Length: 222
Image 1 (spheres, rainbow, N blue to C red):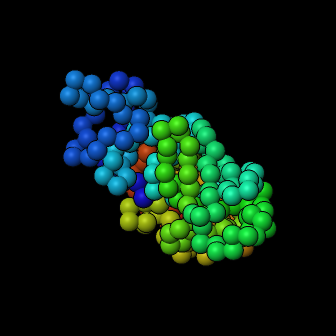
Image 2 (tube, helix red, strand yellow):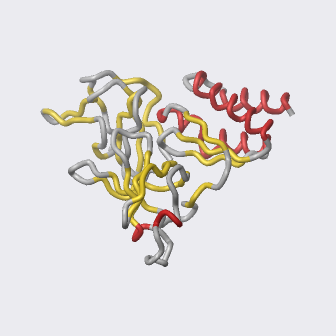
Image 3 (cartoon, rainbow, N blue to C red):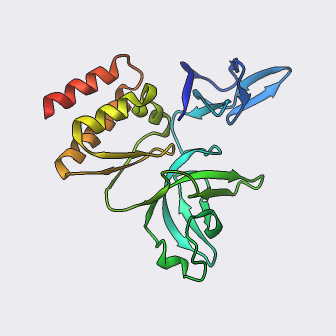
């Protein structure tokens, strides 16, 4: 998951201290110093610092876990909407399925929802995805909620505290994508409660003590 270097918004051209991290997305180097390309929040992943824009499309980073939707099927790969500036591609070789003679649309069809990881981003900005990792899978049924990608780390919480509180007090299965797509599965009334909580977290993400407030709201709604 992403971890905040510092809880502050940076502006375009603002100098950034990487604090031992490597230069990632949304950051440029000039004269021995590092600056932000855009207004956003500094977050890190796998020792890379990134400036994530406050709004707009999701910008993928290698090894991100995302939730995508199949939008087209080619002879050897699926084209996925991952809510980014470009579509993602899932090749049959990057899946656990062995029957390569089977037509791909019999494995994953248009509109199917899948939990994947970003495997590679090429120089030509092709985004290649993978299902070869623990927990990655087709998501059956459930409900989809869209949130701002920059708020996903707040929904997860420190050490998973926020999302675990939501799961434990509602019994709803929650799968979070770094692209701001959230999959929920459970009783309709509980799913509706979680949807409202997610929107509440989005709105109050900048405030302190949020996990405790969310816990209190959920306990009172039981």
